Structures are given as C-alpha cells and as structure tokens.
Length: 116
Image 1 (cartoon, rainbow, N blue to C red):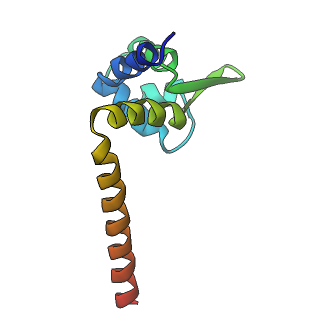
Image 2 (cartoon, one colour):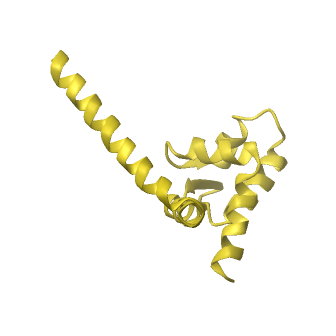
C-alpha cells in the first residue's frame, strides 16, 4: 500500500467526530472498550465499529487483558500522517507553528518567573 493510500485511511478515520473524541480520550492512557463505550450516548456495537475503523487505520492499538480489550493511542501514526499532509500542503506553516509554539512557551516561562 502506498503512503498516500495508507494516509487516506487515517483521514477517513479522522472524519468522524466520535472517532476523534475516542482518540482524545485515549490521550490520557489506555482504556477498556467498555470504558470508552460508557463515555458516549451510542450503543456499544457502534463504538466497537468506530474502534475497528481506528484500528484498521493504525491509530489505535489493542491488547487483551483477560476478557477485556484495552485500547491505546498510536501517537506516532497520527503525527506522521498528519505531519506528512501538512508538510506537502503548507510547508511554511510547519516552521511558523513551531516558532509560535516556542515564542508562546518562552513568554509563558518569563511570566511565571516574574510572578515567582
């Protein structure tokens, strides 16, 4: 499979707000399928299908712990796919965003030092 076809699956997975919320929830660490389902007002089978799409896109990993299935975020996969797209479409924004982040971080550090 080519990189662009591979990345297309990532963007299809990201197109759904429920799947994006699942990814955000997994930022805090591994969650059981039941814990994920409990956070949504849709059926457990629907959440299972969403998790299957995310797994197929390589955005989440799963592991069994007894009778539970635990899911975790595959951060590198998400960052690589989105980063590759951003680099191709707006490469100058990568530099600007990194510079802005550094400037904002430095400003925040200076403000903390002045109030201490």
